[in-house]
Image (cartoon, one colour):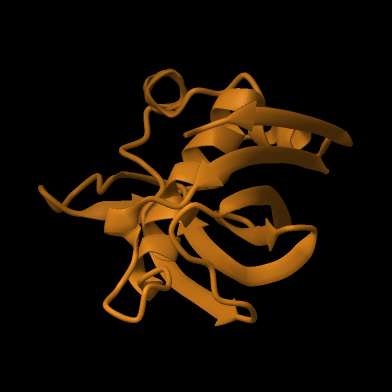
Length: 147
């Protein structure tokens, strides 16, 4: 599988009054990691959507497990990859490491969605393109920087 890594520096504003990362920021970072995964695989989302006539990849499920707290100044290494493919949906798993230890792990389920053919303003799941599945299933690792 194609794996992408980015580094995230925890900023003061990412933390709650207890001086640890506010949980919702991990979900924001999951989304950023997903975008970075597609871009690193040579599939920037805006171009990909236009090329395949889809609206996007709406999120239908998100989960996180918090293992170690992180705080202002910490550097996290986020590793993301697609771990499950279905007909029109896929699961992206994220692992956030702090100092070589697993701090947070999570997953997001997305649906490949196009405009509904008969209901304006609605979306409809459509089958995932074979080329997207193939590219994101290829065993490669890529590292990038975020902050």
